[in-house]
Image 1 (tube, rainbow, N blue to C red):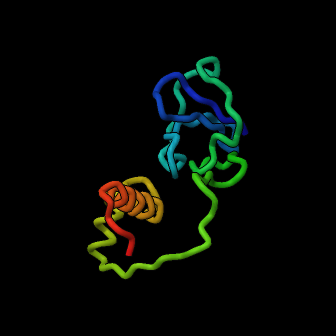
Image 2: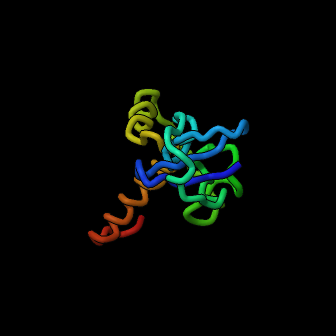
Image 3: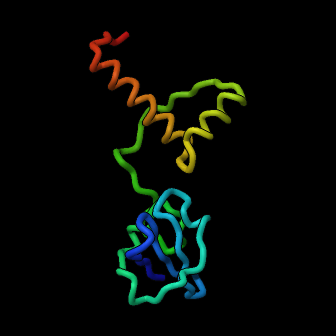
Length: 120
């Protein structure tokens, strides 16, 4: 299976499915679930490494999900209400909730550090 980058629309990929059909999908986490038929020709596409499809759900991706940093060795749990979780998931959009929470907390911690807040 091959993976391509179209000239238009930006932020999308074109991947072959198992039957050899070309499908356009967002180059984002779980983007493959939003795939539609590619209406162009192969000449309009730039071939990519299957590694570029990691994390999108494209079945031809190699190497698993990409990570920004090394895997965490610690787990933090937070008890939340159903309403809080639904609100957070809505704010996270297409991102995994755990990634959104981690990034949001890191942003808050960095802002506190810039203001000179002491660590507890």
